[in-house]
Amino acid sequence: MEYRNSYIDTRGATGGRTTFTEAIIRGIAPGGGLFVPKVVPRLALDTILDFARKPYAQGAATVFRAFGVDLPSATIDACMADAYATNFDTPAIAPVQSLDSGTHILELFHGPTLAFKDMALQCMPRFFSASLDALRRADAPEAEEDFLILVATSGDTGKAALEGFADREHTSIIVYYPYEGVSSLQQAQMLTTQGSNVCVYGLRGNFDTCQTAVKQVFGDAGFAEKLARSYRLRLSSANSINWGRLLPQVVYYLNAYAQMVASGAVAAGEPIDVCVPTGNFGNILAAWYAAECGTPIERLLCASNTNRVLADFINTGSYDIREREFVTTPSPSMDILVSSNLERQLFELNGRNAEEIRSWMQALGEEQRFTVSRQCFAALRKRFSADWVSVDESLATIRAVYAEHHYLLDPHTAVGYTVAERLRGSNPVLVAATAHWCKFGADVYRGLAGIRAEEPLPGELAGLDGFALIRSIAENYEYAGAVPQRMAELEGKAQRFGEMRDANAEAVEASVEEFLRGRGQTA
Ligand SMILES: *Cc1c(COP(=O)(O)O)cnc(C)c1O
Image (cartoon, rainbow, N blue to C red; front, top):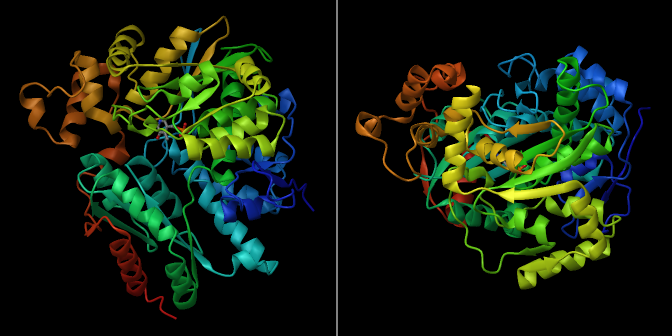
C-alpha cells in the first residue's frame, strides 16, 4: 500500500481522518474550513533537482506520492501523464525564462486556455474522477452519485474548468458567464468548447448577479434533492479552495527551481525569492508549501493591484474590507476582496490553531475585518513582503519591460514584475507569469503605446475585434512572438453554445434540467 497522508481542516471540525480522495470530492470541510495535509513532506534537494531531468509529469507524480495521495501509484502516474502532455504547447509545461541574472519568469500560461488556471485544472478533474472511482470501490457514501460542476465565471476560470472537465468520467459541467461582461476572446474560448458533458450559458447580468444566482442554486436543498432523486447527481463547484487544485500548483515551483539550477541561473541550494500576482492566494500559498517541501525559496513577495486588501493585510496584520470598494482593473483575475485561500496560510502560520481561525473568520463575516495575533503576524512577516501597483504603473511596466528585456508581459504579470522590482533583495527573483499577453490585447496595447487605461485605442485599432487586435500587436511588435495557435484557431471555429438566460436562481435551475434532459439522463 502506498504512503497515505491524512487531512485536517482549518476550523477543526474533522479530526484528521480524511484522505486525499475524500478531501478532493468534498471540496470544503463541514463547518466551512479548508483541508490541509496533516504532514507536509520534505523532499531532498537532489530529488527536487532531478525534476529538470525528467518529464514534468513524472515530477508531478513524485510530489503527489510524497504528499501521501491515497491512490495507486500507477493511477497517479496515468493521471499526470495525461494532464501534462501535448495539451500544453511546450514539453517543458511551465518553462522559466531568464530576463537577466536577477529576474526569472515562470511561464504558467502554456496550457489549453493560455492562463495559469490550467496548471491546476488540467490535473484536478482527472484526480477527481479517479478519486470517485476509488471511493466507489470502497462503497463510500459520498461517491454514490455522479457530479455536476456549476461555475460562475468572470472569464478565465470558466474556460479552464470546461477544458479540464470535458469528457471526464462521472462529471458534467455547466458554466455561466455574464453576457457582455467577458471579452470577445474569452467568450469565443468558452462557446467553442468540445466535449459531451459540457455546456455554457450567458446570463443577463454582471459577474456579481451571476455569482449570486449560482450560489443560490447551491443553497437550494430542494433542488439538490431533486437532482439526487431524478438524475443521481450531486452539485460541486470545484473552486480554488479545493485541495485538489492547490497541490498541482506546488509542483511547478519545485520544477522551476530545478530548471534554474540546470540552466546555471542559481547554484544548487542557493535561495531564491518568488513574486506572485495574487488574487485568491492559491498560487502564492503553493509557493509557501513548495518552500516547506524543501525548495530553497526564502521570501514570498505578494503583489496586489488596486484591490490591495492582501498587500495591506501583509503590511499591517489587519484584514479589513469595511471601507473598500471593489474596482475593476486591467488585471481582472486579481480583483478580489475576500481572498479565500488566505485562511490556509494563517492556519499554517498560527501553529495550526483552529479555534483562532474560527474566531478570525467569524469576525470577518460579522464585522468585515479581523486582526491576527502578534505571533501570527511575526511569522507572516518573516516570510512574506507585499506591495500593490496602480493601473497606470502596471501598464507602464509592460512598456518598460518590452523595451529593456524584449519580453511582453500580460497585465497580471506586470503587477507581479513591478512589485518584484520594488521589493527585491539580493536573491534572484522568480516572477510567476499567470497569463499570455494575447488574452488581454487591448490593455497590453495601451501599455506598449503609452495610452492610459480606459482610453480608446487610436485610429483604425479602435474598430478591430479581439482577434485582429492581437494579430496587429504580433505583427507590429517584433518581440511579442506569434499569436498562439490555440488562440488563432478559435477565430474560425463554430460556436456550440450561445443561449442566454436571466441571472436568477430559477432560470439557472431550469437551464440545468434542460441540459440534463438533453443528455437523456432522466431516471
Ligand atoms: C487566478 C489568476 C490570478 C490569481 O491567482 P490566485 O491563485 O487566485 O492568487 C492571477 N493571474 C491570473 C491571470 C489568474 O487567472
